[in-house]
Length: 194
Image (cartoon, rainbow, N blue to C red):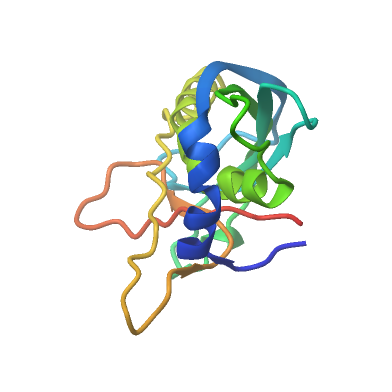
């Protein structure tokens, strides 16, 4: 189930976990690469990325595991497609799970993190911390598959103002795999499951 996230509230909810957690290890847990077909000669490519974070924690532990499931779809860009780049012919799909082991500095005077705090951390700081590892993995795998190395754009967080709270749509990035001539309109965002 996908829902919008109030980023400001999630960051506030995640702050205590952020003050206790330190990343200790990052690993690839799962990977499925599918090459559907070769692109046409000199055809521009487009891509989409979806991210779904989750955590594993048992009360009393001094660690937790953050997992982010990624799905990257690479398509031939259609000349007539304006903002809807998902209409091109699908060339490849990369689905993988990247995970991080976090240690927790919980002393006798501190409480264990709550499930809500861990969920908020996964949707904010946790996703941001794992994303560079995932970007490198996608770039490496697309190159090995014979595509131009795909550099995923950075995650862009909405800028909260007094008039408009920082609500985010589900994280879903779109962009071209070639270098932009002028400005490229790429957007990264993440799916959040309850």
